[in-house]
Image 1 (cartoon, rainbow, N blue to C red):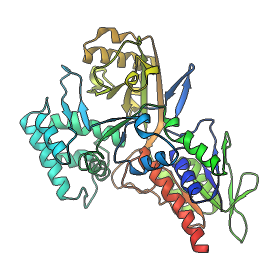
Image 2 (image 1 turned 90 degrees about the horizontal axis):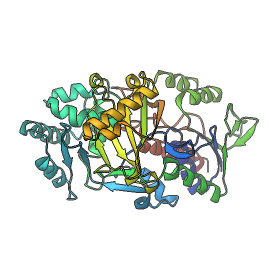
Image 3 (image 1 turned 120 degrees about the vertical axis):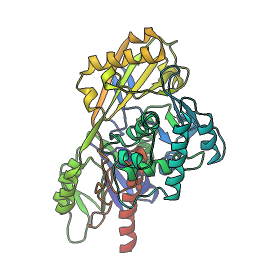
Image 4 (image 1 turned 90 degrees about the vertical axis):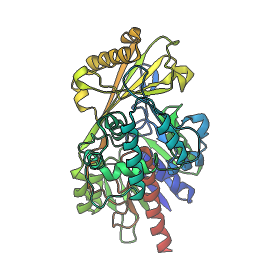
Length: 441
């Protein structure tokens, strides 16, 4: 069976690999010149940087499975750290680290040892975790994360230091408007999972090299093709015998659409799925900004990354800072600072935001020299993720049309718009078209 995959982000690359592994002749189309979509490498003044800093979890089973399948050495490609939320000393934060013990002992001991939390904070966290387990991490009716936390009497300090930053990092949506059900699903696979599943995985290589480039090579080794700079503008049924025509009339037995919702909606409407196309118009989007600051090569943090207390009134926008030199020696002295749901921060302008972030690091780390980086680069993805709001309707992978499937981190899932959600959707979309193949036989 010949299959076209339109879009070579993580969802499209996952679909292409799964189809190639099943024996399909795959052609992977990508409008850009770089693989990876919204989680990719970008060239900045001769340097390979990511368009955003990511943390994966040990619970990302499908992502890790496909990485292994295309030849990625996971422990060489990523730094494995235990679940943690650690703030710089003297910054008024906390220090929470899960030891490498079986679950749930790792969390119990982490909570017992946690610095910066009062007894009431620890009791609130323990109560919330126990109640969520009892509920099987599910709600009868979705609500906002803020409502959920208020309902279970979480303290202001715990919300500020634990729940709010976790919500922003995972859902890229402020707690006041973020889905509590999706947040619980993330917590289920981190706080509520096995010790290994709760591990935090920091990429040592750029995001394109972490999977998309190897995925494309896998497709080519299997006899398929990868076309960069190839935008697919049209999609139509081939004829009564089935199949699809792309672009100038190239025919494929099956198609997976793995583009962002606006482009997917255009193709779906052309294909005859007008209602599904219309359903993709209701998404709202949130930006993510990553600020890179280069210091002398000897400049290091005490840890690979820290959580930061963001406070717009104080000009503190950064939420996490990563020491890239501890992940890749070639990036010694390079720090990356992440700002999720960064709409307000972006209004400052790139230069002013970069200086504000540098000043924030200097203040919270007690190192005045950090106010003066050698160079900075601010990268903003304006539509990094959909706004993950309560009760949000997300489309299925099946389109209702033969051998035509939809993939993307916005498709139906209990996860937010993460790498794992994108990979799961790609795998599910591939299985939709493969199932149609099996049925015809």
